[in-house]
Length: 109
Image (cartoon, rainbow, N blue to C red; front, side, top):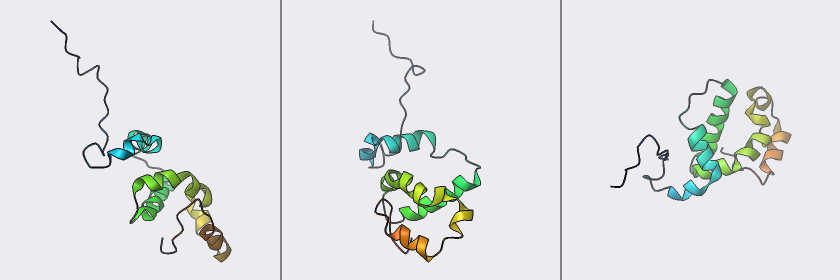
């Protein structure tokens, strides 16, 4: 008689997307890392919460996987989403951002 595998020993992680039509993202290392380590995990760091607000704003009308793919460049371009630095951006800095091909460049965002 064959033994059934115990549920304790099976460590399959159910990721969003398996049931919501975005299974193509499950091959993305960045999506898997985000899903498993960051999504729906409490974070009380004000700067990181500000970063997520900005990233969510950039995501409007776009896929979240695109945001994850560009997150590193966005963090670098926006001074790691430091609100004190961003609040002092001038027209020259905004123009520099608009010329940065590594980030999402939409004046409305």
